[in-house]
Length: 243
Ligand SMILES: NC(=O)c1ccc[n+]([C@@H]2O[C@H](COP(=O)([O-])OP(=O)(O)OC[C@H]3O[C@@H](n4cnc5c(N)ncnc54)[C@H](O)[C@@H]3O)[C@@H](O)[C@H]2O)c1
Image 1 (cartoon, rainbow, N blue to C red):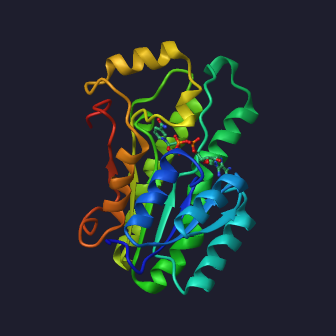
Image 2 (tube, rainbow, N blue to C red):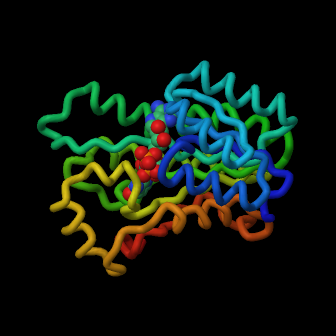
């Protein structure tokens, strides 16, 4: 029960890695608020876990502010924020339209700024907080037809380091997780050829499972396990990247 008494907000909680983190946090005793744009699925998981559900689009500045301030008011505190909501599309750079670029940056990067921006003042006031940003190993190595995704995720890693420097003196630790390929609906849609080739180049020879990523999110939120991680990017990635 490493998260007993902690109020945790998890975005992208209706599916994949976010849902696995929600399950792991529930098992560790966290007081959970699950956030997603998919109302039915996030409510379903929240009911199963005895958590609260909020249907919010994480790209909306006003809605995310109301969400975070509302949770802090209702629960008296907000201890852990997991920024996991994300999208993935494949488009060659020479074919990419500006809307596709902007949408990716909005969902995968701007949302991380928004949620952290609204949560940080509450955490600073408490003198304790943890922010866990789900980036990707593609933010470190880049990927074909993924300039927008790679840029957004590299942005998350840079944001994590800068926010960590600002907030650590206040007891608020900001870190990132950069998973390798994980079997979720996000990658299930990619071509079989891509998946075969990708699997073959991994030292481990296989994709990860969401429940193999979630324990890293528990570690980063835990005390004392997470106490010395500041601005780090942890890589449960089947050996895809070895920084
Ligand atoms: N699956 C992988 O291989 C992999 C690898 C590295 C990083 N990641 C990252 O992990 C995170 C989770 O990915 P996943 O594989 O679990 O995907 P997923 O598609 O299973 O889950 C993503 C969730 O985010 C939600 N979401 C998307 N846009 C939203 C918005 N604007 N507002 C609110 N909710 C929104 C979706 O509804 C969905 O429930 C993403 O940030 C992704 O980039 C995934």
